[in-house]
Amino acid sequence: MKLEKKYLAELCGTGLIVLLLYSTMSGLGSLLRGAEMGVGAVAFFIAYCLFYKSSGGHFNPAVTASYWMAGKMEQEEAKTIMIHQVIGAAAGLVLAYILQLGASDFADTDIPEGNLSVPAGYLGVVLLTGISTAILSMIYMAIDNNKNEWIHLLRGIILTLVVGSLMAGGSGTNPAILAIDFLTSLTNDFGDAIVGLLVYVVGCGLGAYSAGKIWSKIYG
Image (cartoon, rainbow, N blue to C red):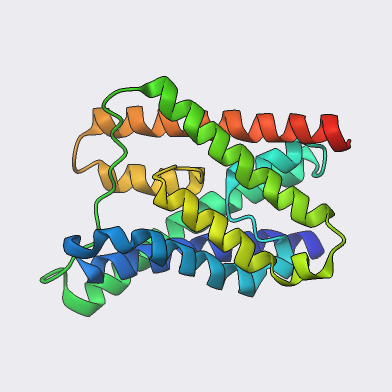
């Protein structure tokens, strides 16, 4: 039952982040698209406060994969959690569309289109995404291992600041949200969307693998 709660918490938390992010951004419009970082950080903080006690508050397949690579989570458990995170993200997008349809019938605002195009510098984007993902994953694990009660008391704020900073830097460190960006980018250009998705997902995978292996070497 405990693991079932963990799966449900990750599904709901990831879905809530996507729902709040896309619903809010559709209302802000293109002039305030730069507010996405702040909206994403607030959405993460809300989801984390609601669900972290049940699941650890990953809401990110790359973070969960790093725990698996580090030996802090069994393979089957990690895979099941990642599947639930992706399902939650998809459900969040569907709910965002439903709410938008009910609010305006798409007359005034619309769900913002994603933009996964990476025109050049694929290797640089992969490395930047990998480093960012590794840093985020290791911060999660470091907080878990830290005995300082203040660190645990402020863990939600610390992680929110890290997630917000990575979003501000344009780093796509969450494969579940990248999948949603891919779906909403299809109206632009399928080729650019698929290349962008692959570049970022490879970076996330590299970062998760590196964080897990480095952590296990140092602390395992």
